[in-house]
Length: 118
Image (cartoon, rainbow, N blue to C red):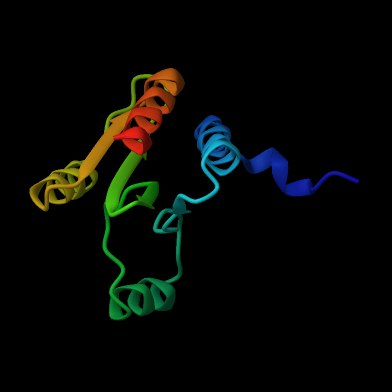
């Protein structure tokens, strides 16, 4: 029986899953994670997350491979990164790592392929 929660998934969720599935299957040695800093929280949950060091704007996906780090912010349609998301991407670049955002599946896949190969 399928999960009743599928009805709440968004187009960005499915896009995100397509990218994580690709990386998991093509590059199983890549360490990849999603930082769950989106969503609505109670006042206590917001306090606790902040208390524990959660930062707004952290990219959807973070990848580590062979001494390299890549932050990826996923968008759909004409959406663009928020101010905090753009600042996080720039901060990553400031540390000489790779950081991208896109709403284009093929662009992200091609970027990951080149990133792993370099």
